[in-house]
Length: 220
Image (cartoon, rainbow, N blue to C red; front, side, top):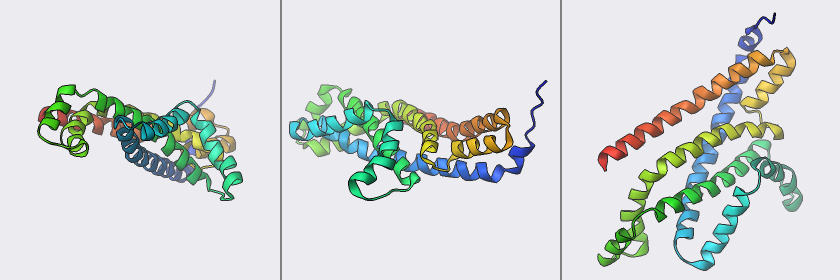
């Protein structure tokens, strides 16, 4: 009968803590970048300007229709061949995850904007608002409420995707777990603890999004 033993995990908790911190940093950077760049792309795709929307659409489709693992490996191994600039594993992972996330966020923004009734646009124009002011004062405040569940799902998926960074030697949580498992020969204990840590790291963000969504619903 197998006897679980968590002693080695407790003795190396500092390694897991360091990995968790790198995971959180990677997650925060990629999500913040994705939200900001995705907003710009979503607005461009909703602007009706064909010369701007077509390149934005191409960007979105490239990053949505290729595996994120391939994107991270490409930035780490192929990008330096083209530019001569060798990035660290963390930088390559942050860049790949951020660009991938921005493509998905762009579609969330675009879908949220498109969901607003046409009468809202017409009412704003009747008041003499330009496109930018109309978007800022009428369309986006309403659309954001509808986007929160989608952004929550995207953030959760991104938090879990950070584990992929371990393949390019980023010392995040999964990398440290694999290293510890190979040293202690205790994969059951190590990956059980890692699963719990991921849940502890990700779940508070989910609760926060629920609270924000409820507060915005009350205000509306």
